[in-house]
Image 1: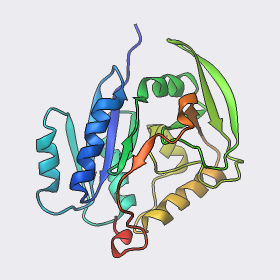
Image 2: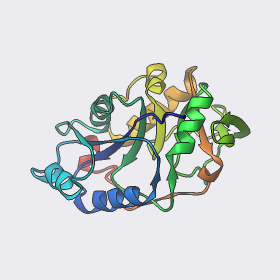
Image 3: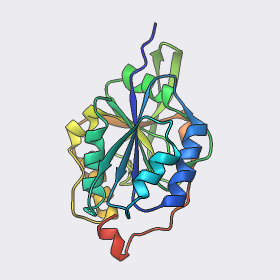
Image 4: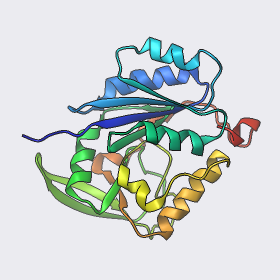
Length: 230
């Protein structure tokens, strides 16, 4: 019998009390995975009571907390990934990306386990990006699985994106942790460059992962005073 590995659901947040509740409710509705989920809330120093109220409102979930202190996205997520252990697979979702339909983590796990040359599966929907793709398939316990490998040679920088994705723990062993004490956009650009410039596991998406799959409901903080810290 196939043994499903534990997945950590890493929710990255700072002071979005309404948005994060919408996100969690949507994830509870749309996540498709028969194995164990470890829910990790990575909070970058939201006002007092924020984390406690989220945990209280969704008290049936297996919560594990990671709290940073207005140190920025990099520190918050690096610490959050530490809190994901012992799970070896991490699904990352920021607090303002709401899935429109089912998020099939089971297929993502099948793909990552069947093909060790892959380290991350994007779920956000890659439409609108200038990306070069290879259509491939791999055998899995559920039969042949078709997927799209996103080539590092793609014209677009953001083969990697902070948007919702499932990744292996080993992915960051090859590409390193996120830079710290920098604005959100710089953090993403730095890692996207690092991914394209280094050898290591590739990024893929499921066949269903081309169309934009999440609503971005948060007001952007980029370029504001909070951007250096959130």
